[in-house]
Image 1 (cartoon, rainbow, N blue to C red):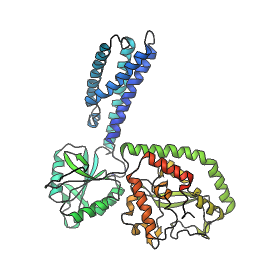
Image 2 (cartoon, rainbow, N blue to C red; image 1 turned 90 degrees about the vertical axis):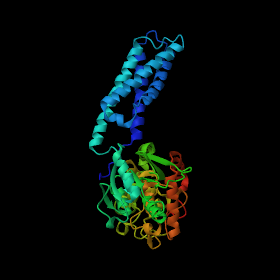
Image 3 (cartoon, rainbow, N blue to C red; image 1 turned 180 degrees about the vertical axis):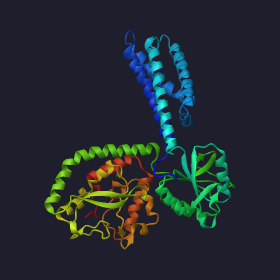
Length: 469
């Protein structure tokens, strides 16, 4: 089973190639117009280039030039490209003849445009083909799929998957009765129980889990689905042989089979890219803007007490991976609590004078923008908790069932729970339950607009709260 490296997203590759094609067609047209500027009606020529760009992308799509499997063979990629581009030229010719008189599409510039666009799109196909070869060698092509179940439904599913040329890889089979079963099911290794699957999903990369359990085993099915909610994977339920009245439930079609959508990966494809761009770009801008404030706080910490400026603490990050979270030191050096085994209290004697102010205003969290720029955290997300953090006498993961479900996204500097006042001391189990409830709401309803709303509420005091000290 392959470690960590994510599977290449078909959606991102296909749409990226289409975007490059559009840019190539339009860009080649603009360059060609400037190259042969004599006697050209710029307004009409611009309209022809825009029309050619729209027609080109659409005809290339109809010709199958954006099918993911086509990119793996350079000959196929070029032949599909030529087919779509010839259709584009024909449609463009007919369109410019229909709107008489349109002479803007005539002359050397038009020939240079069409040839230049074709050349650039051919180069892009070559680059993608080379990337496909590299991804193939790295084992990043094909959706990584795990199967839950070893009964008749799972056997029939595995048998059928073996006969299809679907773009997926079965990485293993899992069943809670694994200790009493053979080592293999339909030629695939039985790797353990559902708990082992949760562990493997954290240590290795798994895209989708196909649950092939009988619907009659409702208690086992519900328990299995609840455990799979703890990890950032797509979970799909395979209907049994009796069939289902699907109603309005969403479904996925994988290798010719219909599966019920039970759980979706919180951030994938373009949503993941949007979140990454937001974090890296906005994080870098904010870090640059607050750098004078960071230096001032560092100076005050040094003047107030002996010890380092920063405090590093191990906390759970994305998919339960441990990360070093940076904060400004707010406690005396000899009284720091690396694992947060003792929660801070009002008038806590371990906290310095400057530290008390930093905690009340949450300025001690500002160094975490370095974690954001490094890709370990997000600006907005569930707050990362220390390893030994407790609600009363219980560890958080013991106090809240399925607590780890909040780790399906990167932790954040601020979050939905924090701007709603759920931060600071956790004396009771109810307090941490409210935090997790808000974190899960954020994960299920994520959008750029929601992030911006949380950031705005944080800036205007939503991160302080009555429990901040």
